[in-house]
Length: 112
Image 1 (cartoon, rainbow, N blue to C red):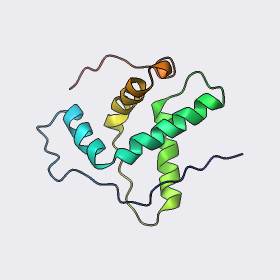
Image 2 (image 1 turned 60 degrees about the vertical axis):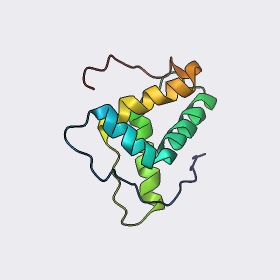
Image 3 (image 1 turned 135 degrees about the vertical axis):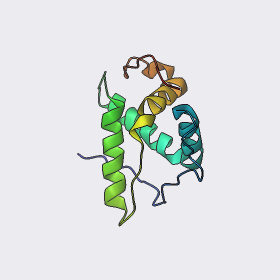
């Protein structure tokens, strides 16, 4: 059985002034504030993986599933989910659900 999450059919909002002088963390925070539903859906995908008995998952896989699901739920909508934000989303999921800390492999962040 294929699980299809219900996605809001909404425009992916980008910060007005992303600015090259902002750190990745600052850009992520601005993006996440405009698109909180993305984190909720990554959380739902992770919970689904847990229910299916997976013990290790990659945030990259979740990104691609979300991109695919959003792509089939919209028409002509540009999908822009910056890969630079992957580690930030994984860390948010772990902060929200400490019991998921073994699901994701995280490394030291070398850039801010």
